[in-house]
Length: 133
Image (cartoon, rainbow, N blue to C red; front, side, top):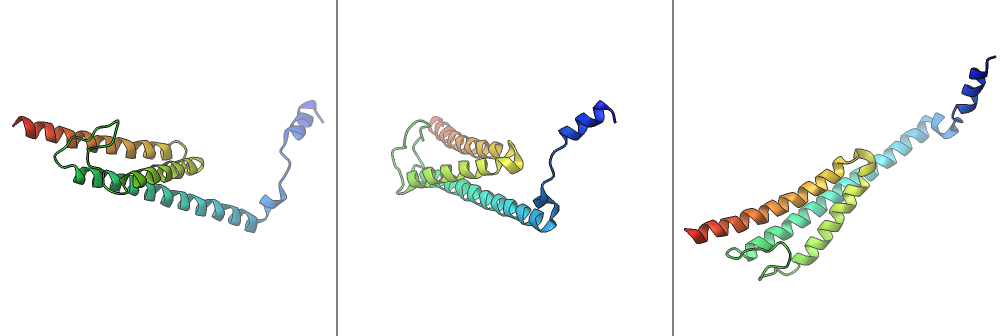
């Protein structure tokens, strides 16, 4: 036997008996699938709460600019709680899905935030255009 064959034998990974059993592999896979679906649902609920809070805020301030760095003049009841819980669930869902989907899950989180910033920008621009005419 050559020295190269001896080195290969030493480098080989030890076999894991639990992976030989197909029942164990299926149960491990199912557990990760269930966790992935739960994380996706949590992230979706977070995105809906976050966007619903913004919609309520815009409807409460139809003729007022909404600032990016502080609260608007009229703040609907519960909108801060909805926004906070929604952001937390959105980020938790995105982070939990990172193992399964990599950076794409965090891109979705950033996408939701960018959509809300765009909605505020469009609302404020609409007010500026209306005031100038």
